[in-house]
Length: 281
Ligand SMILES: [Zn+2]
Image 1: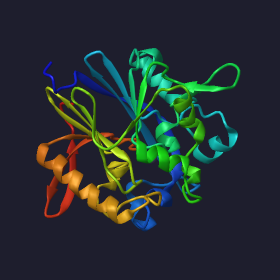
Image 2: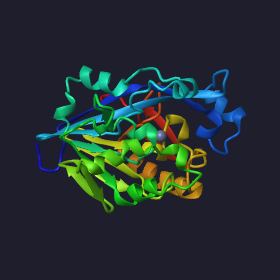
Image 3: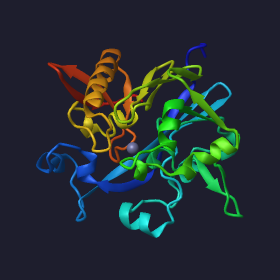
Image 4: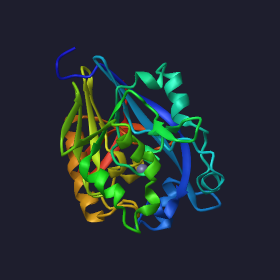
């Protein structure tokens, strides 16, 4: 291994859940988005939770933690999760114990990205679900989540991040950072002011994890954003910038919320982006 490369990565499919299709596609008319992602009878589309596991030397890094345990009846009716605890199953299938995870990266703290950060002890109190891990979060996002405005409150659950602070497992980042050899985070504002994206360089290429900058393969066009985006115009500009870069460098993309085809490569021609299969990954 060179000093700058991670050893390997794999996708951890942590189940699926349903979300209002209109919210997922922002200003895009339903007649357009329903052709690419047909909604169910309650107007919802099915979304993936494609977490990422990276090995780099002695470090075992988890990017995003899914939606967590989903026993709550209201949540179940609203979001119809496919699994009781999808990330735990995916980690077990990969042969990784929670205690072996050394680092957790949350691109942001919305409940569908940080929902599995913590777990309940028998006495009902909360503790980090990965007790030996350092949790890497942008300082701005940490502050934003704690002071969430009325419009954003429904997207955050304090139980997903306050216990990390109490347990002393939090590492707050101020901009770009290296998590391990080959594993970098960089700010990508728009969805939220301090969201971060992840790149993983290995001997065979680079994986790009754009998080909610490009949540599914159907969100490639810069104007196809989400209602949850704080600053849609910033999302459009950042998306164009990152996708141009991914196309030029032939990066593999992992779409966190794509339930059907999470991996692809992107091409850019005439100001438009298109995908091709990520063969060989
Ligand atoms: Zn999301």
